[in-house]
Structure formats: structure tokens, C-alpha cells
Image (cartoon, rainbow, N blue to C red; front, side):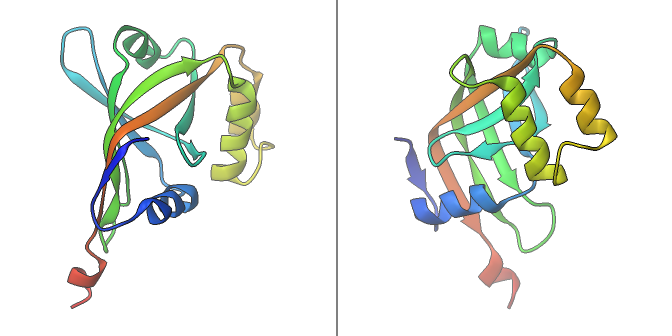
Length: 147
């Protein structure tokens, strides 16, 4: 179980992550030591964040080399609020990457029948990435910004 800081309790964090339809920003460490940030669709299962990624993505190589990541799920419009943290990310054989991608397409696009969805699903080599939070913090400036 990850540590949690900020104004929200675990239920509020879980609800926010379950309901948010904004991408997760994932920061990983590149081979040269500099971080890289990518935006990914995600699912929250109450414990872990799940993302799908093609095996040819450069980020896959970074995650295989160094599992330490940071993440943030937060909108760009007021009121500013969200969840961020540190985590360990791993390619998971326990979950089918193609099936996860189908779930993500349904969550973010409303289905898997558009041109983008068909193209993504036609490719072999989709991987499931499990992002397991170690530390999480929430922030919510709703009250401050409504004054």
C-alpha cells in the first residue's frame, strides 16, 4: 500500500483516478539519466494504474532498465486539482496488452470501432504496463480558486 498525503483520503483519490478521462503523465529515466515525460491513457483498478504500450516504444526500453517512475493525473484548467506520485512500473504478463488497449479505447474514445482504434488494434505487440504507486499526494485548489 502506498503512502498518501494531501487533502483527499484514499476513497477520494480512487474516485478521482477512476473518473478522470485525462491522460496520465508518466516520467521515466532515460539511459543518459535525464527524465522523459509521456502522456498515456490509463485505467485505475483501486491499487495500480494500467497503461498499454507497443513493444517498440522507446519508453518500454527505459522501463525495462529502470522501473522507477513518477506520475501525475491533473487537468490543465481551473480549478487545479489532481494526484501525483512516485511508482514502480513493470511490463505485466498477468494482463493482456491487446485486451487492455481495447478497454482504454472504450474508456477514452467511447469504443473501438473508429479508424484510430482499428489501426491500434491491428498491430501485434501491445504490452500491459502496471504502474504501482509507492507515494501519492493529492491537491485541490477548488476552494481557494472559487473565492
